[in-house]
Image (tube, rainbow, N blue to C red; front, side):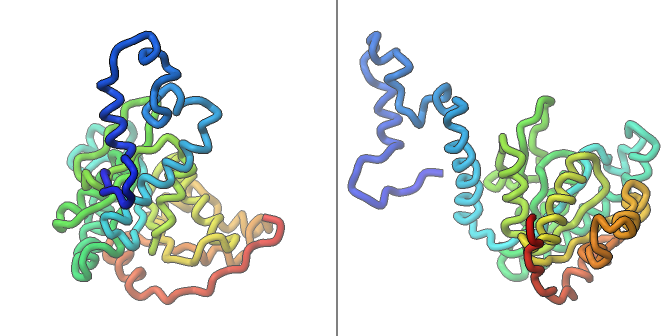
Amino acid sequence: MIEKPRHPLRGAVSDRAKAKDVPDTPQTRAPAYRLAFTDEDFMGLDALRPVRLQLELLKPEMGLDAHGITSTIVLFGGARIPEPANKDKARTKTLAELSHFYDEAREFARLMTLKSMESGGHDNVIVTGGGPGVMEAGNRGAADAGGESIGLNIVLPFEQAPNEYVTPELCFNFHYFGIRKMHFLMRARAVCVFPGGFGTLDETFEALTLIQTGRMSRVPFLLFGRAFWEKIINWDALADAGTISAEDLDLFQFVETAAEAVHLIETWETAPARDAVPGR
């Protein structure tokens, strides 16, 4: 991303290139002489964490703005759920049984992208975590429709390259989970969650908490696969115990198919925003 200078002063990009051509001396070889913004060791210091947080917030934001993305459809889901054609290679029998959600995620993204393209392709753009499994299915469905999609990848201890279906210009990499999750929700018009593991649960409950506490507007919040979600989370027990209100169970809905999810999003009537919960 190189922007045209809007002022008469010499730009940082020009000086970055010029600095590579300075004479080789003990002084110019010293780390102290490096331009601060090109010094990776300096940028990695603990004291620079606030700067890195700001940069990680700004870079994707500016990139999405430059691309004209106005709103998104968020798709969360497990990286380990295989394509049905590969379900025989699944780690467990349950993962193999969940493989049909790969196809549902792909079809959902395809249908939503077709509708997005009817109005120019800048509204309700599919965004995933950019990885394999359900995330790949979401980006793949958008590609099936001939549209673009966003991938918000993150550096992990094990290798995870972005899936091949993410639009390259809309593929971002993160260090901070918190900033990444913020970007997922900043433009969200709907949140659709497929079966997944810790990461999916983390993303799901953070988004639900933001809506519950009035820190995020109500949007369609769809959980694919009632049997899966009711097996791993006893939602009614939370309400019965009083740790959530009974009305909090209305913040989300269960769906089984792509067509059902698209219908609910299209017929959604904006719910009134909640007031923030005191003390939260």
